[in-house]
Amino acid sequence: MDRFVILSGCSGGGKTTLLVELYRRGYTVVEEPGQRIVREAMSSGGDAVPWKNMEAFLRRAITLSANDYALTRDQGQSWVFFDRGLIDAAAALQAVTGEPVLTALASRYRYHSRVFLVPPWPEIYQQNSERRHSMDAAVAEFERLQDVYPTLGYRVSMLPKACVNARADFVLRTLAEVW
Image (tube, rainbow, N blue to C red; front, top):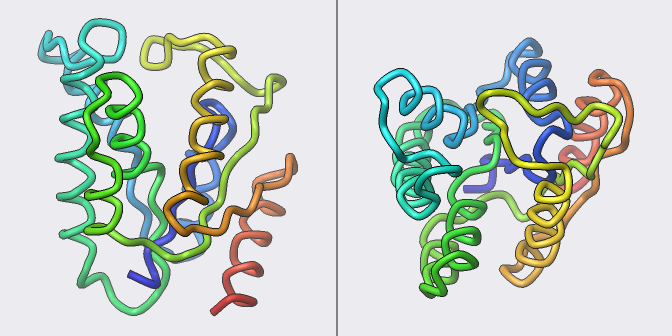
């Protein structure tokens, strides 16, 4: 879908804040599947969280991402911004289990050819009850995604370490140039 745009990259790099700003500007946004899964599991006592059962967490993230994709297909003609999504979850599942799921899922669920990655930003990174992994783990995740997206035919634009308004302007300006 040419209007489905992925924001991915390093955990704790400001993706959610950027999505809030894009929503404020009138765009449709889709919250990160992982955050929703963790909140649900924490409130219900489930174990599909990364620190208990990573494989179950990632399989749930793939299912939720596929549902998000289907539900937003008819959301008008404007940009739809995804905080991570199916490709991130499939890449992680393949890295964890060795199961070759990435290529098949990535070809079935296509997004805009331009993907925006947030770089590691230690100055704003914070662990909390929902984000328990270290900055080192977040950087390793970023490096994996930085390699994965180009192999699937996506062009990566690195988001600047700047205020949220400047980041939103950068995303929208870049999309206007490639549209």
